[in-house]
Length: 480
Ligand code: NAD
Image (cartoon, rainbow, N blue to C red):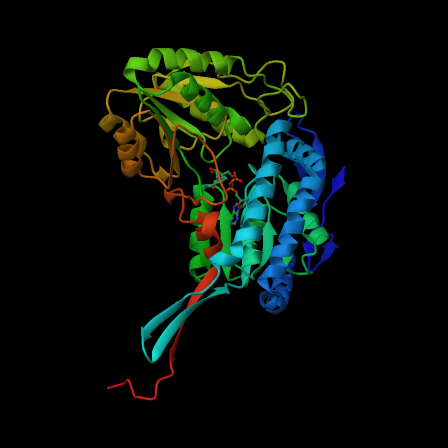
């Protein structure tokens, strides 16, 4: 059994209070991690504060070299990392492999490109006066992350935040504390100085303590409800906050699309990571002319997905992360069926897999706007398909949600693609693609999906303040 410690000021420290991390494929206890309280959080923030002045002064090229080494560590440890991720949160090994590679690519991107996005610019005002801008680190960043990409999302903030000269305290999810601890070990082994990154494991109360501590910024990814709580709790101190929250993305298929490709995209997007992806297509809309063939093809593929332990090489879909998440999903499906939806396949806990938190890949049709599956975020392997008649109806249906994270549009018609991308109320639109991410492109949501900007030049600038310096070096007086 693994025993977890806290990383504070470069030292691994135990604490009295502990909590268990379970393997969702078996329900067995996988390890015991420290539940950091107010005292430990204060010490971690104190260590980050102490390390800040020196780290901020380090040449950015030196900081970038450390992140190149972090990338190398990720590749070197890929096998052990992907096994750990699969054992702690359930997804198939091949998907954990993708997560480690995405983390590597993103870290390398910031290490190689970050510097140029932090260069200030000179602004000539008149012959005697000129201005310039400086980008300065914010200070100590509290990084609070969820369990669904437990390696990628912490580094998603750590890389730009630290490269920009901040120090940080990471609070990983209580469902994946050991992946979070591994993040700390990788940083240490790559040469991050003591106190620059600190790790406090724990639950929501640990996160709350971090938000109300002496930090300068919160970088949060997680549910919309927790995002709202963080915003409220940050108001008193006026912390800077970056919030990447939940989504209920529309996946819209027009009759001229390549239907086979659209079905493959929808199956991958909806069932990858057992449906537990912020930008998964949570509401699928199909034009009426092609609805029957799309639904038939989609249901056939969903039925053939192999459910099992993520460690088995033949597994397509692992367990959900926890009993609590599965119970929430069951209630959403029950609500839809009670209100008249048709279950085309799935809708149950698979009989041979009673020990872990498994749920069958499920397809619901005949859904209506008042059902929970159309209003709440559906975070599990349940696809919800509706039919539309024309583009205007598709836009209205897609926008009928409080969320605004992403959307996926399938068409060969450029005019439709362009109109849809301007009319959809969300932060990202994929055309003939789904759920892809590129470190050089921004990742962002609107409405209840948050107000953060991650990745790209915009992502690194979330972690700096801009200062304007104005210099008058002329001999003549400029004031009236
Ligand atoms: P969650 O909100 O329950 O928890 C996220 C983190 O916040 C955890 O570390 C948790 O311990 C901590 N936390 C809980 N209560 C807190 C509080 N009051 N103050 C401070 N911290 C607190 O979310 P989750 O179940 O871990 O993750 C799933 C959610 O994350 C989904 O809604 C998903 O869409 C979203 N998500 C969004 C993105 C994105 O980029 N927009 C990416 C991944 C996941």
